Image (cartoon, rainbow, N blue to C red; front, side, top):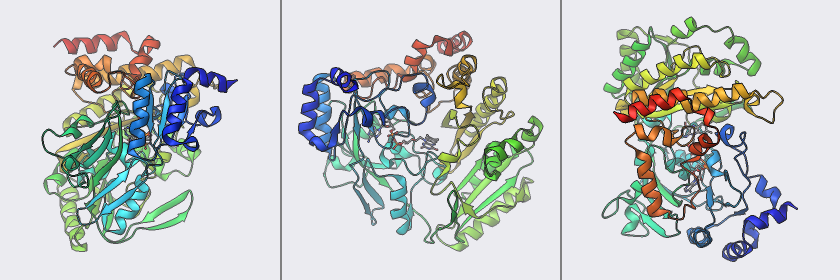
Length: 551
Ligand SMILES: Cc1cc2nc3c(=O)[nH]c(=O)nc-3n(C[C@H](O)[C@H](O)[C@H](O)COP(=O)(O)OP(=O)(O)OC[C@H]3O[C@@H](n4cnc5c(N)ncnc54)[C@H](O)[C@@H]3O)c2cc1C
């Protein structure tokens, strides 16, 4: 029965043409297999819970760029939408709102080569950070491991975000990409970067003429809305040679830090002192990372399980948060042990000597920074997690926006987990020239899932109003750009106050994806939700944003 419905939504000639491209083994319409590609990943609250995450009409698994290009051309010929998918950690890697989508699962494009001399890795879309980091660290090189976890695709992450605490020394991802192979939304194969001149050269990001790589990247990318990158070369960075030894038994595992890497936790006397500390560290050009972490994460790190967390957390007060200013610093002796010792001395002079910070006992193990296993733990407190906002801006703006969001969240807890006016997480990026802010919010997913007996429409609406009204209102007022536009925030709502950038999105789409088949409706996903649930965007937010847009 279900099979018959699937055939109805995808014309049989499309299926047959796709099958002729990759063979019967790598295509399926089996509803059970297709269902497995549904309702997973980040932001599932908005899509899966509201019922907009849909089953693909068919799944194809190409192995080469040419196969991807041919599939995309067939989709264009028949005006059938397609969604590229790497490890599917975000919901935009799955079909939404419609049931005629071809899901292009890229997991067979899994080649990885490391060019040690030029310090680049050339990789297919299926290669994950875990694989790349293991190979790179054997050669004393490193890149990043995003908070989303080292199980995500390196290519997908470089296209969409690509940030981690080590982006203090290591640049943000738009500058880590060297060359790429892009299947345009209409199925043309475009070589980018140095491959424009020489197909075998993966060495640098700009070819002759305008850099076409710019089409693909922003602070956050297109989330599959502008074709598919099948291969990419990414830069690798010098690291230290000592191995991190794994210890413990799952789930209590960590890596032991070798002597050339060291963590420091400081209690700072005030938020201002913490900010100043980050500035001074940057000016002295020391450390591999300096960050202020939300207080709840500290409690999380100390807790054995969810009950343990809640026992301690429910006793927390706003006064506790107001006097807790933890600065976490990480030093790597990139060139030698002496470098670490030198940086440690400068660090102590600044933090303890000048700013009155106090060094706390710090475990020399890593559970989440270098090989990143954070992603699973982040959900532990409530089982539901979404960041309200995240983005790169000046330190002043990050601190101010975090402060205002922390304060505003008081009005939304419950249904959000209380964070007692915590201004979130921020860290210095690019040697302190910029700063990265992220303010996570947690909620009980059962309260917002209509399928759960604990569901509360009122609380669910309040949660969505937080993401889609309260947060963008503060961002727009402050001029803080969020990487979550289009993921939690309607771009049509914010865009007019942001130089009308959705007009540019439309122009790019009209030029490169005239049939609108590349992962629709991205980046208009949340606008679509707003249309269907006007109550999620409050009158107050609409008016406040429109007022700023008029200026
Ligand atoms: C809990 C959590 C924490 C996170 N923290 C961080 C963080 O600290 N830093 C950070 O950088 N990111 C973070 N992320 C987001 C992270 O960027 C993404 O999860 C990751 O990049 C997605 O990789 P993936 O392989 O799962 O891609 P997918 O989910 O498969 O795809 C992501 C998007 O890109 C599209 N896509 C996939 N492959 C391609 C391709 N080859 N070409 C074109 N489009 C493609 C998909 O259609 C989809 O829209 C976090 C995510 C979660 C869930």
